[in-house]
Image 1 (cartoon, rainbow, N blue to C red):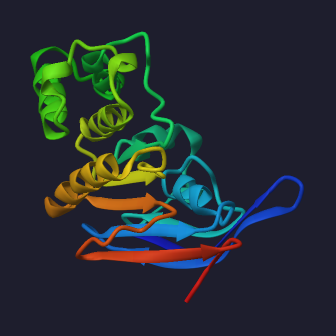
Image 2 (image 1 turned 90 degrees about the horizontal axis):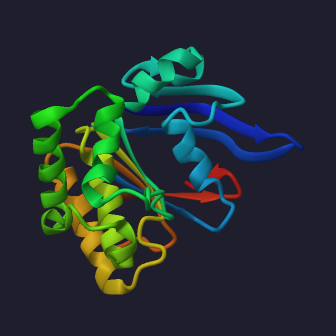
Length: 215
């Protein structure tokens, strides 16, 4: 489902973020991506989602060469993904319902169908009773759960999370990981960049060191 073949990523100024990356992630896998700060974890996630393009090498998503896609085709590719960031990127001038609604509205899903899917996503992360609340009134763990609801409302086949538990205490972090594990159980492919890899059954860990995958 996700395949890297000798991928390199060099940023302006000759900073080489990734070197000779070859890997394969199959459908329904839960993969943790770990490594020191600056190891290249976020860059690798951005390459998967088509946010960045490789300098050389090939990135395949469902046998589609992401590095060769026209810019106009990228939004259609990204519909396969749910993206979750450490800083949430929530809209603080909109309530929880409207935050989760945004990906659906962008994709033209409105009305009762949108409402049904939004409430189902909020229910999955335990926030159904807070759909009218503003994000600023939520705890850090609840804000992260809201970000997950927004990421999954479009029913993506791949979830990508960048340090999703980095700012949370142990209890909240455990809750968030349980949510990810539940999505993996129904066949969603999940790639999580993290400094602290939890003990989760049926998962795999990839370690980056200065832009290179460790054997």
